[in-house]
Image 1 (tube, rainbow, N blue to C red):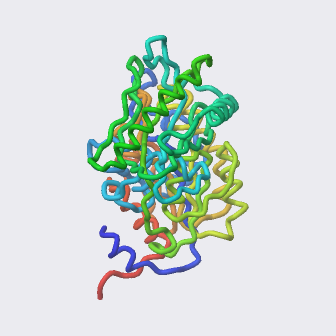
Image 2: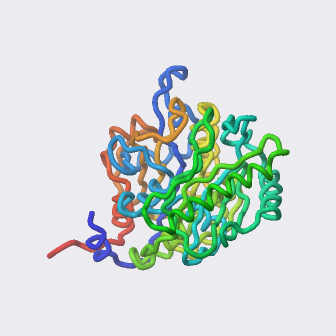
Image 3: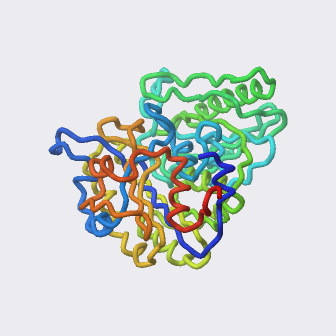
Length: 405
């Protein structure tokens, strides 16, 4: 739907909408598990309780056959065109980490890695070092890094092996390629400008000098003796939820990237803990303050990327065990879905449609006994573009007026 048409229909009321995103939840039948997906194999009594009264379907984050990153996947869920709305991963990570990005800043997503004696990446995640180790290493880098071509390098540790880098100085632009091979067995490639602008060329030079210097500083560290830099970008300006949908929107997410994309969408980002139970508790504590809650659970995606079927089952079950805390609030509309599929067999994001559940007074009742990929494929909602999901949720919440006479 055209955004201007949708936004012209928006009306305000007191209804509550919850968008529960089980990151990467979509999957494929696994031959070693009786052809089931993790969502099928999981014990989900609380989802089972609401499934018969819900409408099921599937969403496509970008387009058929197109594998989305987490940024476009979430922007589409939030009602933005994921192709027209270009936001770099670095910006999302930086905002989520609490950086107040200034005009001209270039932000990047970074992570520690393991290099062999030839400079070849042998582990892109440095053995998934702890968050404590990451904080120590970023502290060391900040102490020993000097400005490069007049550009300061600001660092902030994230979870595990991840951290955020912000380049702050004159004459920078974010259209620069990654200094990351995106696979083991290759050396770190040089970043290069993606436009003819001098500011992009300068940013590429700074990134390459930064990567080289970080390797020098970390040479005596193990397993994190190098760093990869990607998603270089500058902050765009987006029209937010309050302006577009007349919603007081809140985001409950523990990972920086998802907090960042929610902030860009104009949501209030609420502090929360690591577990899905803590996320639901945060929503409960602020229930009266907002109309819309985006609640994010990362564990499903991590298990899919690790190719760990059993861990993905556990992640789904953890969400289900905690779900009564959310159901007890009786949201007018509850949507359960993912930003993309992360099949265990693929060990990464994929283009496959994502299962969708919408529960509410007017949502319709498909009568499905459970929520999983097979039932979603047969659901009454069919297959929607992710960017159209907000219109569906708003309509079910009574927040859209009639179109035309």
